[in-house]
Length: 120
Image (tube, rainbow, N blue to C red):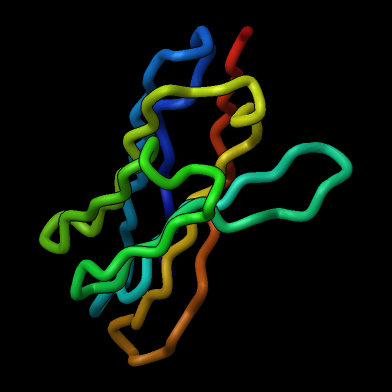
């Protein structure tokens, strides 16, 4: 079917930067909305940012001005550039992609998650 592969998480000091990447592969006709969510233990998963196929973006208020989402429609990839990181950005970050498959099914696919830890 469709798989997502995330990379780029890790440990960084407060004020530093990380770039997350997510590659979609499999039986893909088109990728529609692509986004990043995050979750900490005991809390609900929350939207960090998403981007439409036309590159319209949405950001959580907590990351506006610090994070930038972008995508490569040819490679079916989405990126999240995270700058000026804060300890409260520590979370498991998940890639999410709305996909139309080659058989014209619409799927919402989740990645496995990549851990971002910001030390203060």
